[in-house]
Picture 1 (tube, rainbow, N blue to C red):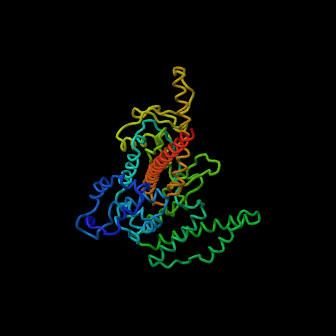
Picture 2 (picture 1 turned 45 degrees about the vertical axis):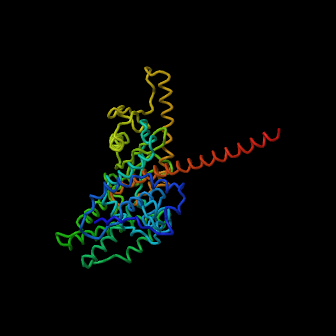
Picture 3 (picture 1 turned 90 degrees about the horizontal axis):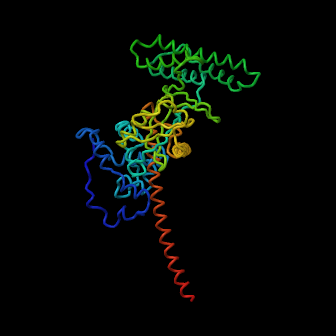
Length: 441
């Protein structure tokens, strides 16, 4: 249920939040540029009208999501800092300073689930619109990267140890008494694994790994025997069995119990051979520098990610790009839906010298997308995805791209203000020294 709209006609007599702020601050300017009414129209039908506790204002929740990825904050941090930052409050629609958190951090989780992927895509679309003509360039660069999930580096023993813990929890919830919990035994086995790389401890460590796997299998089978036929832990036990049965040559291996959809992706990096998460496709305007496409995949071949990425671009901007320049990992189709796909390869003799130079310049320019991906990872929460499941994979990449675009336009506001001050100072000194120069003669 939505809250009733408050009338802001009667405000404080001596204090106005808007009058106390710097009108040249990027967040102040951005708050007047974002189309908040569009979000109200799109998200209002997702709430019931006359049932339940009144929800938080839509502008507040959308503003918190934007601030989170612009400033690289967690749900808890953005809510905490909102209570301390007067610009955050004005950006989210407050007309008076409020010295307490606007909502619980968990309400951001519920809001993301409520609006879904389409709602997050709407925020991404608004970030492109604010960049104006720069976001409507028809020549794009494409690349893929890995969005790592919030899991530790997986090993068989680590997963089996977690299975033992989970089995104990299931037994406790179901009121089942296990024949043996293996608490002391497991503690000794983990000590044997502590210095497993030492040559003297190698055989002891091998035996300890086998024993841990045996214990995990025993507990899973015991739960299957003692639990009733219709118990709520069927999916959990099936997952445990899959982990215990998988080998080095198995396909679709499980790397995490709480995130079973995680993929092992090899991107050929020297410093990091394998990354555990999902693949992400990024489309970037080649000359102006706006991210106009951000889509999550599992572990598809790079060339197969391009068509869905272009469909998203057409959905967001209502048109098709003329060219997409990519690296050799995208080789395959030369044209996708009237869009030319350019990848480095020996030039045809039919091309003129001008056309060859133009393509070379485009290939060199494509490399600019690499540092952009680095900025999105380090500054806008793409390097580590803390959202749950495949839904979390899909929305995190779009929010990170939207955060980059919002930050870009905020930096543009800063630059424009700096240019204005520079021009004023330049004119002042020119007039002053011109008068002094004329007075010398």
